[in-house]
Amino acid sequence: MSLRRFRPYFRYLRTVRGAIISAIVAGLLYSAATGAGLPAMINYVFPVIFDTEGARPSFDVVLLVAAYIPLIFLLRGVFGYLNGYYVQLAGTKILERLRVDYFQQLQLLPLSFVQGRQAGDLLSRGIADTAQLQTTLTSLANDGIKQPGTLLFALGYLAFKISETQNIGMMLVYLGIVPLTVLPIRYVGKKLLKRAEQLQHQLGAITGHFAENLSAAREVRAFSLEQRETRRFETHSQKLLGLQLKIAKYAQALSPAIEVVASLGIAGTLLYAFKAGISKDDFLAVITALYLCYEPIKKLGALNNELKRGEASLDRLEVVLHEPITIADPAAPVAIGRLRGELAFEDVSFAYGDNSALTQVTARIPAGTVCALVGPSGAGKTTFANLVPRFYEVASGSVTIDGTDVRAMRLADLRRNIALVSQEPVLFNDTIFNNLLLGREGATREEVIAAAQAAHAHDFIAQQPHGYDTVVGERGALLSGGQKQRLAIARAFLRNAPILILDEATSALDSDSEAAVQDALRHLVVGKTVFIIAHRFSTIRDASMILVFDRGRVVAQGDHASLYAGNALYKSLYDRQQGGN
Image (cartoon, rainbow, N blue to C red; front, side, top):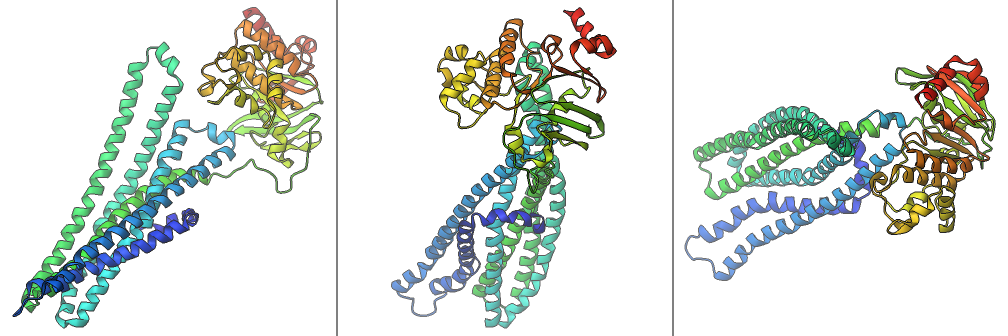
């Protein structure tokens, strides 16, 4: 068994050491009652009752001897129950801690890691794979104690019988067949590891398809894709079913295979007992002890299968858990308060994997500048802005604010000085008030309402069924696009950060909503350093600085008039849009 593979995760057992110790003690007592108590019952209880010669024992003696049977099973029941309960208690707490660690790791990993993977697959790893690992660890804590303990106590009883009767020692020669039971365990284990890896991968695929379908519910209905989506899901589901059946085939074959091998040992022992003239009582006691040796081996084989399934889940979890956190606080961060907002990009390059996004970009944006970023799609505008809050890390060069490299600041300090309004603002399935409070934790209700008023959001909020305490639904599904955008702007007002990033903030709005949002933005940008990423030139024409991007480089900068007169790319982009209008 690959116990070494799970050793780094035994730390989760330390947090529940009280429950684990209780489970171990109960498991050992269960093992003693099973491995030694049951053979002793056959060896010493039955002869008193059935093998009497001459005077029969008194009823009181029989009653006392018979009481041994329920006593043994009572002890097995009580200690088995306590072992199972404490293992389950520990397992549930382990699962909670493991999932929290997984979730926390996702929060700390760079956006490039999260955005490069299917959300449903990451969800499956955090739910299904952690549950499998919990099952594996608790099974290990449970059967990893009870079954070896039962085996040792049964062997101990056999050793005791050897000391009493020399002939029984010869019977133990037939125990040499026990190592053969390892063969089916090893074979099945190898098959299960491969199938379990495929199963967990397919489970991630089916979860990913499920999540993707739910997120595109409107498009599925608009394009009449219901049957197509059902067929795709059925295909994924059938693949999952096939893998589940293959795992069941191997897992269910192990126990009968071990039993057949064990039966050969017991049959050989029976033949020797007949030839050696061993008494019935001794034979039954030894056979019971032998059976209690094989039974733990069978269950340890099942535990090995469980370890293989856990190993497959662990491989998938470690893709996230072992991913290096490349964007983190520096060892000795520079203390900063409220920044002025003077930005400088010095020879900055960045790539998404092998795809270059920015190449040796240099630009200076004075504090209080409204800076528009324009250029064709994929020219590097959003990447440029995302380097300011360190959503990504520069490959070379530096980004500084007020002369300090952003990599020298604590992430929380840096991002507290930045507000973001994106094209599709994310609202959580919570109240409007709590969604606004994300802008600045601890703000008073009066401050939240003032921010909503500044963003022209107060009136529509007041018309909601519960006002500011109305739950907006998943991703703000109960609100219109304009309403969500105004809530995002209200959050930015509440944050009152010196640096503001507007990423396509009005591109998805109708003309009426855009007018309201534009009016709110005009008030929001006052006194701030602002990046405006937009395709609509009506939103950027009044910017005090415009940076023109093309193929990851800044090819021109200036105001609208100078760029229109002197830069062919800017002029073509502007004329194309004006012609489209």
